[in-house]
Image (cartoon, rainbow over all chains, first blue to last red; front, top):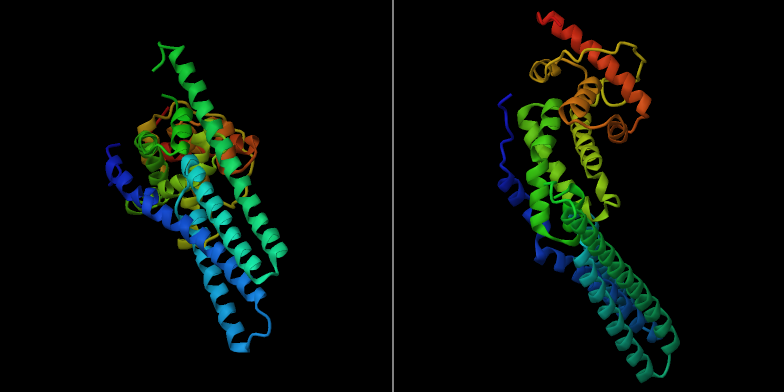
Length: 164
Length: 174
């Protein structure tokens, strides 16, 4: 049988390039982190204001929806469109952790300035920081395990020079 | 370099390892897809398979089981394509299995087999491709087709019997 695929290996790899696009992966992580951070920030602002007119409340609600939509878009990209390999996951986890700490700090500062809502800000922010920290630890652990496996397999190959 | 090492390196994010996996498995995947579909659709579906492989690679928990995982994805892509095109037909991946006792025919030559494969029903064609053309074990075929190993064996028996009948009709004799 002489029939062959239309695409060469090189052409096939070129077709897969968009999945490896660094820009696309950064966009996904930033959209997810910024969307979640924005939603928390706007919610904290909204909860800190009492007696707002209905239209202002509606505007806050819309902002939150927009932020959550961006977060959803980032999450969809990460789970469906762009693969995050082990090293990418470590970087993404640190971006997430930085965004969580920064958002918590800003929201806590606003709460202190207003003299109320600090406990709520710390609880919600702490939840985000803890989640991001857990993801970072898991990402480091996964990467370390893969690196260890590479060493084991490479040493195994080196011990069997007769095998290709 | 073993497939497992390539897969682990790819999971770490080494694009060269992904490229090597594509280069190594491109033809086997295409051969499987081509035996199930026509040439034009085989190219499209092969691309879909590799896209799904790259996207799913970070989540592969058993890098030493890359081949069965790869063909499971290929099978799903082929099934999706067939399902969308022949939704109304009853023949397909959900057909039932009747046990057939007719161990055969190692007399069948690979090239001859390929030429008559297209005349076989989907399930029988698929199992012959996976077992003979891709050289996968019964256990791997069972994992890919999501059926017990016993079903794979009975399906293989039936497929070989049908293949022999087809070959005899075409004038081949053992």
